[in-house]
Image (cartoon, rainbow, N blue to C red; front, side, top):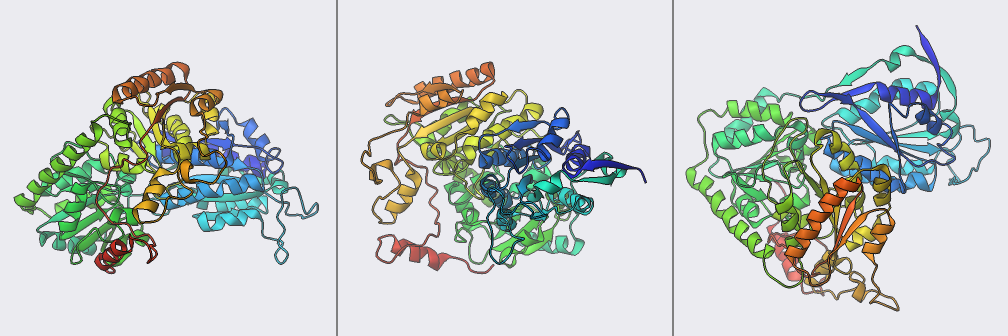
Length: 625
């Protein structure tokens, strides 16, 4: 057997280079598109040297904050529909712990990312080393064990030859449609530099094709039998439809059987807004149209969704006697709430299911209701997008929506903007090809503040190849910007352009709304009701963004939608011209929101006025389906 003598770090990166992946259109691409890195004593000489040697084949991008660069890696995975992965490496200690939050984002959203934190010496000869946290009763524990609850796969490489057994598992998790998520390989710094005679076959090129498991025939027949009894069926399209590339099949199913279709947060922008069967965005931050249809449906076919509380309105969104059918590659998600389960790939299952429903269609009156509901919601959104006074989030979204091109991509994550994008965005059309056709990244699995500020770096990097004519736009509030803005400089430095629309509403306005709407006093959310000697002090966001290398459009207080529209168009042009992020700063109303009329369970003390609403919601909550 031919062998190659390499360090552990060299073997790891050489293996990464050998792994290939397949986009939805069959295009062959690297599985690992690159590495985000911040070096320290725990990784600079081992992994850092190995990456230097292969920088033309596996590019390394310098980050400013470990959480930020790892979040950019997560966004990269979403933008490629989980077909490509970025790695992120840090030193041991605070650098590693900074990436734990990003691992949580990836885990909650079922997104693949490879995290490579440095670790302490396996020899323990120099213990305790700089940044080492000592555990009095367990010397094998390091800070990297904090990754275990937020990892799909975790390993600590204490011998070079361990790579032979663990790397196939790494590839499995990163490319598995059911288990996809964050992989963490903790790399002790002495082991990174240790040499070993690795088999040459380990570094032969290998192409990973995402599995498409077919459904069980009996389960499929049982699901078809339930659907045939439906008078008011509803198709719920989730993120699994996106990652399967099954948007076309989902719409074909709806058209063949005249079934209204609604989207979850993760499945957003898979259905054109003007399609006559489109019922809108489902859930708490969705649309009244979709929620009304969900409440009336007698059979709900939920495809590729984990049915989180914002989709189900804390399980008050469906009728108590509704039948729930789930289609999912992950049995864990499929069996929730005792649903009737079909485990399988979304694309293949929808094709086979429709073949088993020949001749069946939903009643015409139910289909017609979809048009009535969406028409009413559209009129509501039109009204929110017009009017004078201070700019609102709905108006900001309307401006960006109107100016967006088919190849553009929009994202957000936290605060009030997810409700505006999920409930108010109008998808022009869906064009599948190398990607699913989805044009939105709405990170509402973990709702990580700061994600939306750094994620466009990763998304812009990913879509530069698949959608070179498109442009990424991120929308977020001042709270998210202040939390994590350093990767604006990283994107400017590395030459990855996008537009960031920063809405300054004076604090954590959406949580202030939740607080005060339940009868609590406004406290510690808006800057005006937070503790400090000068509550009128405000950050100069325009100056700050310029200092990070961005071009800036500063829309003045009192400006209207026409002013914002002109500023946004100038920002688009500047981003393309300079190959840097362009930031649009605008002042927005902290009290104007798009409401879908759904209930969300949050703990409300008995002394607050919102307690009655809480109890009413609990009474309507479906405990078992």
